[in-house]
Amino acid sequence: MTPRERVKSVLNFQKPDRLPKIEWAPWWDKTLDRWADEGLPRDMPDDERQRHFGFEPMRTASVWPWLPPAPSHGAAVIHNEAEYDELRPQIFSDAQIRAARDSALFHKPRHDRGEISVRVWLDGFFWFPRRCLGIEPHLYAFYDQPELIRRMCADLLAFNMRGLEAVLEILQPEFVGIAEDMSYNNGPMLSGDCFREFLLPNYVALSGLCHTRGQKVLVDTDGDVTQMIPWLREGGVDGIYPLERQAGVDVAAIRKQYPDLLMMGGYDKMVLNKGEAAIRAEFERLLPVMRSGGYIPSVDHQTPPGVSLEQYKGYIKIFDEYREKV
Image 1 (cartoon, rainbow, N blue to C red):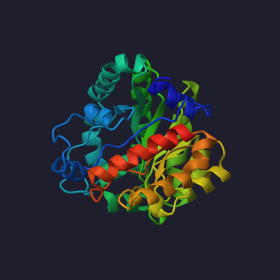
Image 2: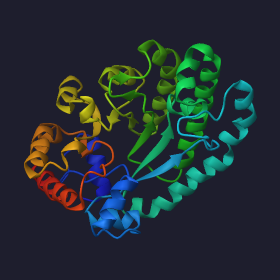
Image 3: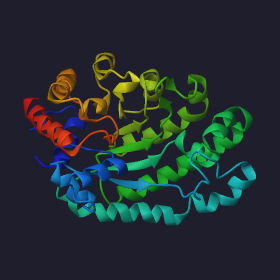
Image 4: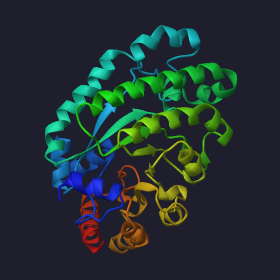
């Protein structure tokens, strides 16, 4: 099977010749700096780095609204409806749709040959207003500026649908990924009532389009997503990632409760520097879920810089063993 066929097989709860070997998020820059000091070529292109470790690349065709750079991390670039109206034509411009098409065209030859899998990468209905308003003002805005939140979500929905259709004219990706990060170590960052009032209608509409076009919908939200799973399911979401273990996420418990939920990630990155026994124990923990289908095992977000190059190579070797064992 090709790398693309393996991903499609797992996402359809079919059995591939072996599990996909995916590192869906790029490595931290500080991790790569350390590995360069330990012998990995510093300027190695990502494709070459993926091949070096034996991964089957998953690439993105991003449908990304434009925003000016924030003055600092988590700070606002828009403060009120008037500023939003001023920037709105640039945020959702035709140039951004063309960029999404160009990305799909770039990946199409390798995708057609089955060498890579592709996800369409969309801004989510929690993520985008936060990018606009800043972390803290965004949370207050559900109460202080509710109509602005509704407008942002409605505009984003229309833009995402345009961008998705533009990509689907060129290739059929393996799934649609939605960037959200609306949960962290203690659970959701908004209430179920807020989710259902502001986000749910947009999820229902977007998932409906995706399913009509034969696409799976997976949401990327860090931390403990467990409480949010039924909310996302109401919106038509098919799966979640990255399933961070240190936030208490238990993929076995999730699989038991939601047997048809797609999952990606789940491997506890915090064991990678704890030796072979700990690395194997983590794979043993995940093995029943790996065998259940609908699950692509991967480090639950990016490999931290506390992991040496040799330790990571050890993880890769054991990962290959468990791909065959499944």
